[in-house]
Image 1: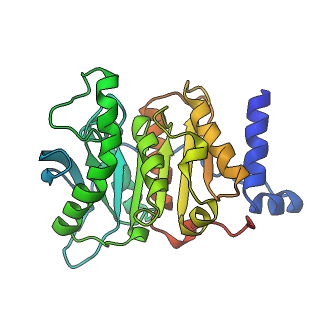
Image 2 (image 1 turned 90 degrees about the vertical axis):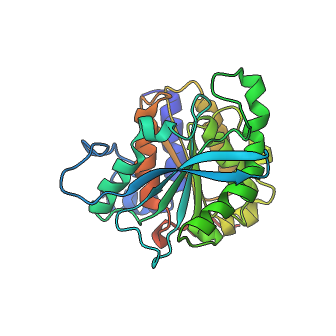
Length: 296
C-alpha cells in the first residue's frame, strides 16, 4: 500500500468521530462509500419514471434566452414542494452532458424505488453564461463565461425554477454539485453563497476551483450553515491534488465534510455517476447534517 493511500486512510479515520468507537469495539466498519451495486445506472423494468425536459429562461445577465434541462421525479405534483439540486457539467459539456453520459434520471429513479433518496427536482444548466459560446471555443475565451454563471444562476435561473416549478425556496432545500469544471463552480458558488445553498458537492473538481484559502470567508459560519459538503476524486485522476488541497484546508479549519477518494478512479463518468449515487442519498436528509464531532 502506498504512502499516499495510507495518509488518506489516516485522514479519513480522524475525520469521522465514529471510527474510534468501531476500532475500540473490535467491529469491522463498513466502507462509507462502497462501489455502487451492479446496474445502479441501468433502467429497471416496472418502476415509476420521472420526466426530463428542456426549458428556456430569460437571462438578464447575458441578455438572451438560455436553455436548461430539468428533471422532475416520479409522481411530481404541484401540491407538493420539492427540494432542488443544481447539477453542473464539465468544461467540454453543456446542459445535455449529464443526461447524455451520466444517467441522472435512471440513478435517481432506482434510488427512489429502493427508498434511498428524497424526491427532488434536478436542474441541469449550461454553465457558461454567454449568448453564443460553446464547448468548441478556446478555453481562455470560455473562462469568463464560466465565472459569470454565478450571477446568472443566482439572479436568473434560480428565480425561474422557483417560479415555474413547485419547489421549496429556502437554502436548506437547495443543493449544488458538479463534475470537473462544474465541481469547481459548485465549490466556488456554493461555499461563496451559504445563504443560498446548504448542500455542496465537488466531483473531481478542476483547476477553476478557487485556491483553498479563498473558498470560505468564515470557517465558523460555514461549519454552522452547511448541511453537507462532499469533496471527492479518484486517486488516479490527474486533478487529484485539487480535491486533496480542499480537503486539507477544511480539515485544518475544522469544517465538517465528507471526503471520498475513489481507489483507481480516473477523470470520467464512471467516477461521477458513483458520486451522484452517493451524494443523492445524503442530500435533503436530516441524517446528512454536519456531525457535531468537531469542536470549534
